[in-house]
Length: 380
Image 1 (tube, rainbow, N blue to C red):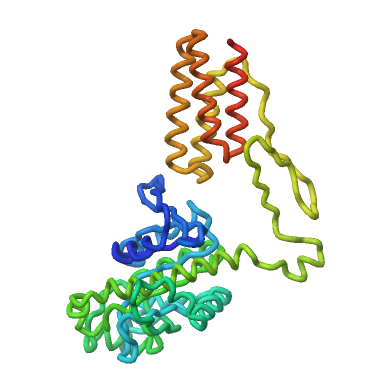
Image 2 (cartoon, rainbow, N blue to C red):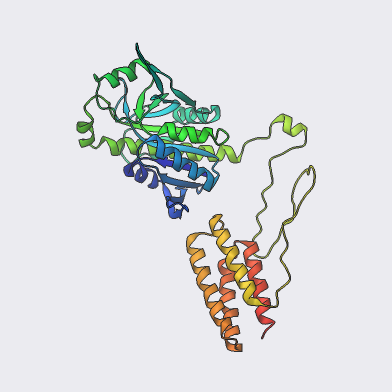
């Protein structure tokens, strides 16, 4: 899974337009993400809104990493250009991010002490390949001109810069004169990615203003929406390529020489069950717990099934709609069993059969339902 984060609602909507079947995913602390698939590709993406500023960006990024264990992070949005040669609507891909507010105040002035995070080599190479081939431009809105794509540093701080002559503006341009654009969130995301085993990350920004006092004018001309759409188109194409690259990453010669290959993923459907499938096994092997024999009390089995369903839903093995429908059938089965009559037990079996159909794609849960059905039938 790839996680894409934005700061503003219009940026969020620009990315969301590239997803199919987005569904709400609630974090325990209240943050709402949406899980969807890339249009025309079907690879999974988690989309989140962090709000303005590097501090909330870092917090929400950390939550996203802990919740989804993504293979890469992307931050998508708009930014202000720091130099006249950068056009409105241009897409800037950060080669590195400056957290520019760090420094020390001394008698002879303010001395910069920035933090800097670079894009990883593989992600940079993929982004540049997209730029050269222009395949990403297929995701632009119909009729939209193809903007320039630029690679360079981005400065991220806590100030909305909208002046070319203020002391702050002069200091930023003098101290970080290779930065192409300025914004307020990328440093937080980059810091969180760095603290999670240097998780690959990329920042893609569309230029919506020139950070020179003309922001009100450019915003009135709808440049924010256009810049967000351009950035979203490039970022979604990049997410797709990153997902493909991570899925098809070749085994290094050193690992191959040792007989080590990438892990094998087993998918069991219907009532099939898989133990171990592997070319080489090093060390001990532990097989997951097998199902216990049917308990004498089907009510206890049903309660255990409800707990396992909840865990599978939290692990995203069961989607929201299926989880809701499955909960309803479990409730029907539990109520029918409580009647302690033959008719009630028959109703419970019917509900459980429906439940087994709902959970057919999750082999372990479907098998557990069969165990409960057997336990109920033992009472008939």
